[in-house]
Image (tube, rainbow, N blue to C red; front, side):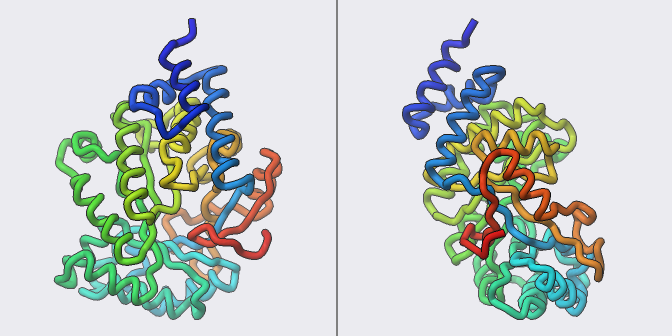
Length: 340
């Protein structure tokens, strides 16, 4: 027997996604079978109207800050190699080691900028915990560090470390010990936007959180994005401890497209996190972006946390062809580059 609330939610999503209630959004997260296909179709139609048909990607390289952050000369070499391979974005994941000194984070930014040798390379680095760590090491406020980092060449910060934006869930995920408070995470991310940096936004799903907490998380992201204009994309990442089902993953991406409409334009189908068939389904259900190719290079292929995980342009093109859409290389902020 059809679920009346779910049918009502689908009707509301069809006529006015922005008017969905929290209860309706929760119902949509439970969609399955024909209802899931209807939800995916609604999200895909909204995606088409908002951002067009292109499946986008960025050519990037990841660097592990802990592994390379104390060796600016090596960082410069790795970045120069990435640029030669066509990268337009360098991502730094994780904290800089203590031996890098009080200005280690800024030294890393300067090394990336020097290695790039061109303003066309975007540095995406430093989650909220790293921003707080950098500020504490140099005895400054997070705002002062972010301003200095932007002036040195930082372009954007990752919205990771958000996990689930609920203090009780965060504590549970942290072994029962209080984690970085949601209010602090939001304050630092807002500050990054205020000083001229952009960010991504994320949700790690499939853990102890409820559908209602997922909806609350998306609502908070939408509020931050709408008030600052600084969020470029949303990325849903499956919990490594209890991976969600394909059904739940598809529903979440579709609901994210609906709830973030008007505040976050792009929804990513994170190809390293999902089987290729599911990535294709996500692209048919509200997602428009594949993320980065994650180049390794040959100088030091293990320099990034996701070493050995690379998407070729050919594989990206095959995914786009599979869903009947064109492929387009983008900048970090979704600007145009030469056709892929």
